[in-house]
Length: 99
Image 1 (cartoon, rainbow, N blue to C red):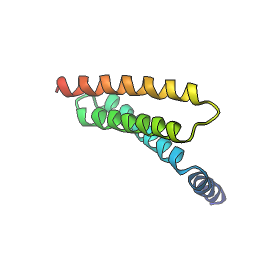
Image 2: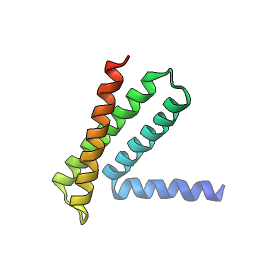
Image 3: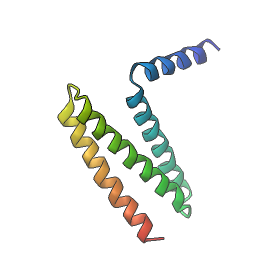
Image 4: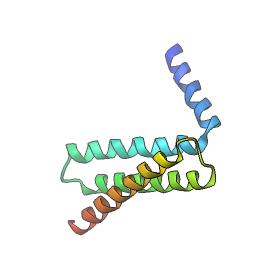
């Protein structure tokens, strides 16, 4: 029980310290879970579409956050977010046209 309380307090602290980055990380974690589900169940296309839409939303959120409040790693973060956005958009369009 002590371990669960520690993890819960850690998540609360992280969400209070930087809520935008916490939400982006939650979106990316859900996207990864959905991608794994779409690999396990290949006939279920909605999992992949939902995962890619979460990734697109997270990438857009990262780009907006970096535009408003730049961090120390602004260039690397922007490049990674743009690459994730391009790959996610391509995958999303591919999933839509192949269904």
